[in-house]
Length: 553
Image (tube, rainbow, N blue to C red; front, side, top):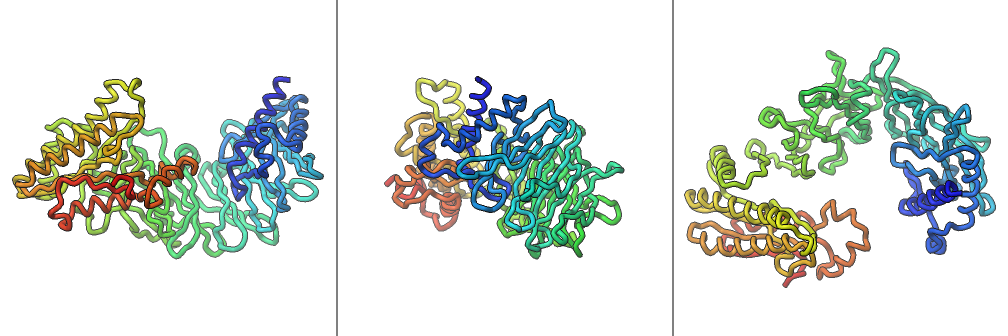
């Protein structure tokens, strides 16, 4: 009986989780009317009856076996498979006593109750993955099921759920696959990445012909399946001219040297799949570089997919891939590359900025955690040797911690003060010596609006930013005679990627307290720094510029 209760709980949690997403391609959905919402966690009758049927399978020796990989990993999933506007239920089981132990049981709503209409059975050790998509644009959803046949072997089957039951329309061994539209017709194709009989990596291209999904061609790829399986990635995107393509990333494994990455780009020409970057001379991709944990993406929002490539000079100067300059390359369907944008990526901390063309050859970036005066002096001297002078210093590094006072340790407080205040003091001191000698400069620091009104917990952060304000005003008075201007920017709430993922019920009350009715954009903060660093602010010094939408006045 306890086993049945656990299964009911699993179904209840599946229902609750599925309510959070809408039904769309490659995703599963679950919709409830408001009355049903208030019934949670007590399930409506139609779901308790479904649960009774699932419990019967469990009592007869089955155990639920949710897909192990992908985005759809619930033991019970809901999706409209036949396009009638009502969602079918799919339950995933394993019954070791059966010849084909893996089961996907499909239930359809009839007369306000679910009844089983089909079972998809498979051999192997596990259901690896499942994806839902209408491939041929007929209003019915095909099921792409990955079966774990053995520890080293995966098999892909695509099923069409027909009135007389599920029909397997293709099957192949695979390591990765992608369903996308490469030939720009109304239907979607399938690309399967696998090892052929000779142990060589290949991509099989399946397309619809006369209502049948057929293998149309095979293209070579440059990587082994082992290089694809671990840190590898398959990404759909666009070449120049808007041509759809599949970008495949393979990462070298088992080497003590810095790992290499190889990119293949697959596209369709004359109804055949081709590898656009495959060299006619070497037989492998022309895109091989140092692996920097970056993958093809539309880095600049222009609609093209760019491939990351470490700048050659930077690769020579910085052997560690944690932070470096990158060129982002687009291609046409002939494999001709073109640099679209360049960036500096701090991969370890997860941020980057785009480098204007005018800056190329005139920018240097180094990453250091040292705050002692000797280390900072050497770093600043290197800048002066390279560029001849030091015009602007921005003290921007900082950390925060939301810990209540009685839980705060001295070590935590000192860590915040060391980075947020001591580092700014040391950098400002070293920069002042250089700027005084050259006849002037600008020192800017990042403060915060919490330095002006505090915060309820985490006393170290507002204290450190209050210290930045004092440092700024004091240095402005002291250094004005040397033509050194000193200012700070105090940002309010900024709509960063981290903030964007927060639930609306958390964000909206914050926005309601902002007179301008919105959060700051990163550009709003950057523009304040640009203004204070420019000659437009040549008579501005000692200011703490609040950029907060009038929160603090």
